[in-house]
Length: 245
Image 1 (cartoon, rainbow, N blue to C red):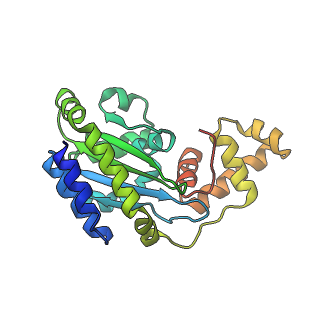
Image 2 (cartoon, helix red, strand yellow):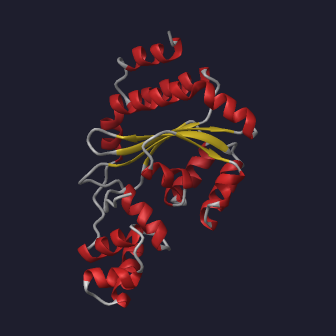
Image 3 (cartoon, rainbow, N blue to C red):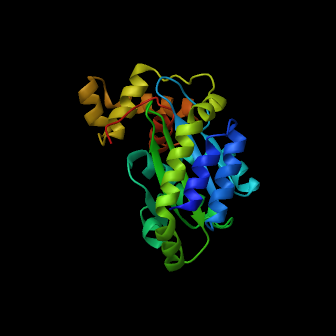
């Protein structure tokens, strides 16, 4: 019998508020030896969140920096979570080698707050929503792997049960007026997200490659980002495009 998980599930049934749910997750993971976690809610179909919903036990200074700098658009853990259906570990030199400069800078800053390695549970909800539960560790690689291996099932189930019970309320609290891209902006981002060049996209849409680049620039401005890769990640998070990844 898994006492910690069973106790969490029993207590969750009586939870009605998002904050009470956050405290329960925090206490349960702390009992398992994990004092840093984050639940990131990304989007629901046909709605949009101006900023992703973040529930966490991180240092408040890091949370504010993460939100203010829009780090969700360059977070390599978020990027992998968008495409993954199964939980995964992250961190370390191997993970770092494939990051872009912006992602590497973000992770360097995160390490100052003890967020060096971790384990993430991607959540693809029944209504099409996207979310993720991550735990972060300051330990060296071998120690982190042992702790994650010992409790990966519990972390996975905590994430799924928490989202199933409170996901709808969490998204309702974070929902804002929808950000709109034009049809051409969305089409250009969608094809680029699927690996097409500006020229290939222009051939598909029967417009000039200059127009493709201009539509992408326009989408970047609306999304408040500075590169097409960041625009793609943010557009996916907000449910504005749905590439086949």
